[in-house]
Length: 480
Ligand code: NAD
Image (cartoon, rainbow, N blue to C red; front, side, top):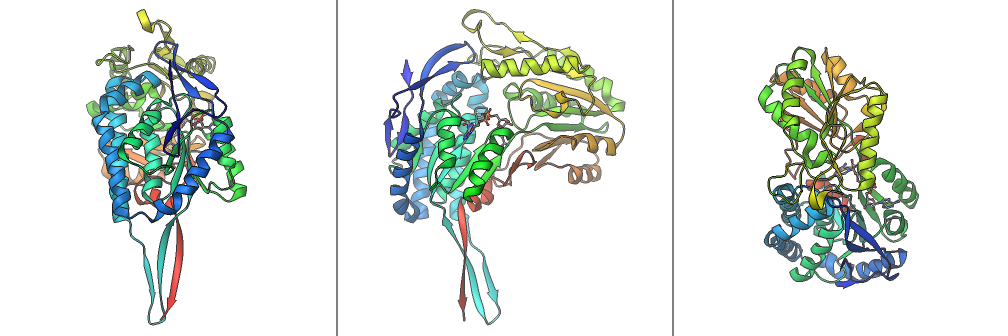
């Protein structure tokens, strides 16, 4: 059985404990590879390697840093199909999605920051004839990046690329639930000639080696994407040590549909924004609010499309709905469907596990599920489910829609559908979320600020925001 290795000091190495965790293919329920069960000792080795590499990497010219990152991006492109297949097996997502979205985006993340660093400029502040100030943006040192399982290589590269481009040395931990593509990436980094110790990838449990990274006194910044509870725990350890922290956390995103929208485009996109990646994208809209005059029309058209969606083997090219990521996660999602019924909701379609045939008979599949009849304050509409489950509800006024949209502790993303531009702008401004899509969903420009408000996070990723996070701004003042 394949053993995943840590990538420390430019080498693929065993965990010092020699202990491994089982890695399950969620579409079959079978163990198919082994993951290093790393400890604080492995984190310390990674730290030593990163600290030793920092003086040279932080003073490597921007052009040379950019060139090696571009070579890694090229190699991701050359290995698209191998990486997409690995992502699909590890995560349960359709191989078509991994081929069209996850892996190309991982390549773009690295290519984007390889060039963004060449355009990253500092400000100067001139005090008339008295002085000149300029801002010196220096790499921080050794930084930690921790990523989740839902978009494994996509979110892993979204963090390490700006950190490396800005001249930091990195210790990165992918989710222990989906470690495979980060492992394959470590081989590509070696092939691309990334100097040893610049990037170190340590695999293992969050509570063990992830925690050790956060608690390490000399790792100066932590960029984390994952659940809100984990984020709060990380902040409680890192904040008293005055580490820089970027936290991208959970969501419970509203999708607000006004009667004057382009109905066909809205329906097609709403199916995607509800169930892409089995609903396991932090940006999926899970609370669909529909203006009452089109509520019944929406319900009929939406259910017709959802009923045609078939859950299938993620490795079949035609599959659009694969497995959810793990047995534990499947049980969590199913328990929320039971809760929704107890809270008075009606399951309009789906609502249960799907059993497939053959090698997928023990896989973790859930039918796309639509629930109605629930008010905004019930747990189903307040807590993040993070699976193929949405609720639908009518609203009568703009005020009611905004109040409902803002009623959770989360504030990551929202989607609005209307052809009234002025209403769109006004409502967008009233929504408490870091991102608002109008008449579209998940249209991403990597230069834009990305992140959430309230319990969805602190700080912004993307574009120069990420490069600012991974640098310390120093004011240099010269008296004239
Ligand atoms: P998680 O919080 O369980 O784990 C995320 C990562 O943190 C994993 O690598 C895990 O090993 C690590 N971790 C866990 N405990 C840790 C600890 N004590 N110290 C250090 N590291 C620790 O989240 P998950 O279940 O992997 O991911 C799903 C969550 O991620 C959802 O809540 C989803 O909304 C969120 N998410 C947010 C965004 C965003 O951009 N805001 C994007 C994707 C996913």
